[in-house]
Amino acid sequence: MPRIDPSTWRLRITGMVENEVEISFAELLALPLEESTTTLACVSNYVGGDLIGNAVWLGYPIRKLLAKAKPTSDADMVLSTSSDGFTAGTPIEALTDERNAILAVGMNGVPLPLEHGYPVRMVVPGLYGYVSATKWVVELKLTRFDQEQGYWTPRGWSELGPVKLSSRIDVPRAGVAAGPVVVAGVAWSQHVGVSAVQVQIDDGDWNEATLADAISIDTWRQWMYTWPATAGTHTVRVRATDADGLVQTSVTRDVAPDGATGLDQISVTVT
Image (cartoon, rainbow, N blue to C red; front, side, top):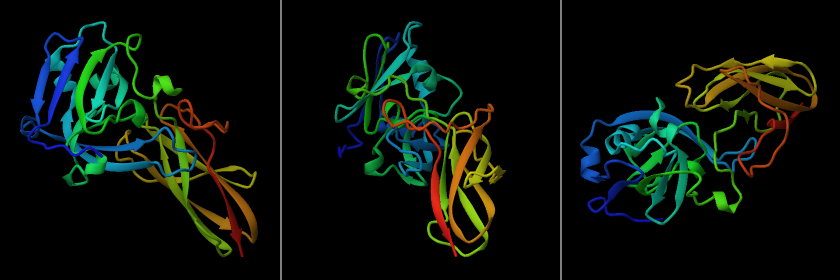
């Protein structure tokens, strides 16, 4: 992992802009920082996987720095570069609309950990990390998708990476006794929000789960369903519906090139 002296760190905004901008770490910290509670997901997260997490980030809105740089009207991509040479191509609208895309300097109430990109990283709701979440970021270059590519695009991954609607079962994790059993987990559709979650036992009807209050449309949403479990081995599945009414697909696809799809399911033995 890169080890950067914050006293020498600089972020440059270059490329298709009217004004190039450069900011130091001290200057960034002096700005009015904002908290952003955001769920981040890796495009390599398989259905039901754990390459996803939720955190409270502290940072400065990227859109405000881009406004100072004044991108030209034909720029449609921001190519962010890490100090180690990694690059990510992010649609400019994801960094200039109302979502809280930030240059993060803190995480869960403490300075940004080294493994999460200290001293500064990008946090962009709604996009997989490979096109948005550049750690140890040192440059934002305004450019075009038809002119440049992020690191993973020529390696077979999609140019755009919006996070797919998905859900996961977290409990139960082992065999259970017959009777009321809590089935619970999380569901997400960043920058859209989750409106419903349903649970299916074996091949029966879909049952409505109870949803926890949403922190925001950019975070996952916890859910639970009380299952009247009977003896035997059962298959439990989950699916989510987003705030636009889209129901999570049951079609199984691999993580490449732009994120896995399908329904998470577990086998539970009831005694």
